[in-house]
Amino acid sequence: MRSIHFSVISLVAASVLFGGCASTATSDEGFSNILVIGIAGDYNNRAHFERQIVSQLRQNGAAASTYYSIVGGNNPVEREDVVAAVEERGFDAVLAVRRLDANVEIKVKKSRTEIDATPIGDRFLNLFRSNYTDYTKPGSVSFSSSALLAVELYDAETQEIVYSFDHETKSETNLGLLIDQTAETIVKRLGREGLLGS
Image 1 (tube, rainbow, N blue to C red):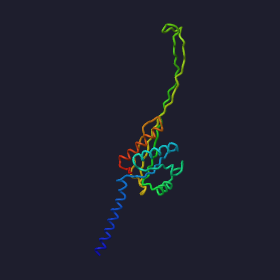
Image 2 (image 1 turned 90 degrees about the horizontal axis):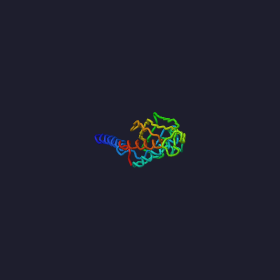
Image 3 (image 1 turned 90 degrees about the vertical axis):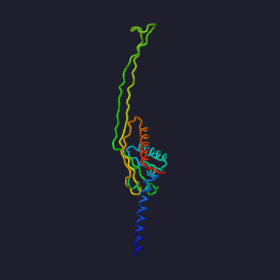
Image 4 (image 1 turned 180 degrees about the horizontal axis):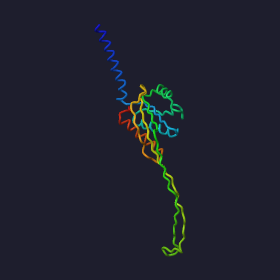
C-alpha cells in the first residue's frame, strides 16, 4: 500500500514539475517562432507594418512570419485562420498590433506674392528706374500623424495574452518612416522584457 501511494505521489509531482517546466520554459527562454498580425484598415500599410515587425524580430534572433503572407493577401483576420496557421506552422506565439486611436495634424501655409525690384543703371535704388518683378511664393500643405496602438503577445499553446501594452507613436510626416520606427520600438520592448528567444 505504501509503495502504491508513493508511486501516485511521484507521478503527480513529476507531472506538475514537467508541466511547470513546459509552461515556464517558454517565458524563460522567450518565444522563438512568432506570427505577426497587424490589424489596420489599409492593406498596404498593414502589410508594410507586418513586414517591418517580422524583420525586426528576425534581427533579434526569433523566427517570424507575416499574417498576410500566410492567409494569401488582403483577407480579414479570422480566429479560425489564426488557429490553423499556428497548428500548420508551429508558431509558439502570436503578436497582434491594432490601432486604438489616431491623430492627423494638417498645416496649411498660404501662398503670397512678393515684388523684387532690380535697379536700371548705376543707382542703387531709383523708384522710377527699376524693373519690378512679381512672383508668388507657393503655398504648402504639411501633415503629421501619430497613433495609439495596442500591442498584445499571445502564447499560441494557451491562447492567452502573456504581455500587452499601449504604444503611442511619435508624430511623423512620413508614414513609411513612422511604421519603421514603431516596429523597431515595439520589438525592442519585447526584447527588454525577455519575451524573444532564438
